[in-house]
Image 1 (spheres, rainbow, N blue to C red):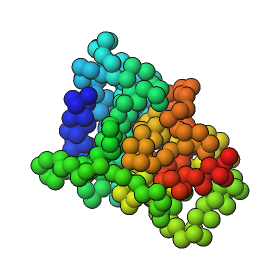
Image 2 (image 1 turned 180 degrees about the vertical axis):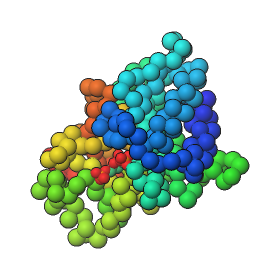
Image 3 (image 1 turned 90 degrees about the horizontal axis):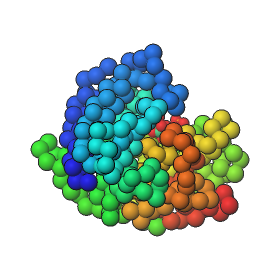
Length: 278
Ligand code: AFP
């Protein structure tokens, strides 16, 4: 496992430098989720897939940018890595933070088999969260990765990060979001899952929601590449992740690119979501 984490740490430095100097123009291609691909999406995906497939304990990988799972030459190896190479890449032109999300699965691609997860965040600082027993927070200082300690959510926060197009929200969802603002929660939403969820973690609590909407009944965010890895991080930080009624890490996966509505937060906010959605 440590060789996977070391490879991701080294890759973070390379991707961070690519971001400074690669075109963000659109290509002709779209990925399997229907997003138009940027040149940088493809470049980072190619780089990461080559690195990860070379690791002796990795049996297979699957990327948000690719339709099928890719198998390595190590057929008896235990681990499968699912990753989103560059989540939020449409924000690069606005120079907002973006990230790489990863989940490490033992033998099968199933939430119950997730044994570690995390993300890299490319912002004014280069940071990485690695969740195993705890959600550990690392920052690169120009020569080494410093361990800043474990992230821990309070039972109640102050941030409200509501995703999705408002005109497509259900009325009960709209009412819930408004009730949080009425209680004094503040809007903090960049449109990048990594910085938006990271902000709630480092500020100690709040709610990030990406609900079912009339144009996307299963939400937008993908289980294997985005939602399961973040659910694992949030639970290790003392938080919660549900789809409205069920714990995210109890959900099954029907296909590689399946999406789900999702709510991440601290105890108080997730209790509210349960009241509204149950
Ligand atoms: P891009 O990778 O196309 O920028 O999408 C980012 C993302 O998948 C995720 O990072 C955000 O949380 C979510 O989309 C934002 O979606 P909305 O703009 O619909 O709120």
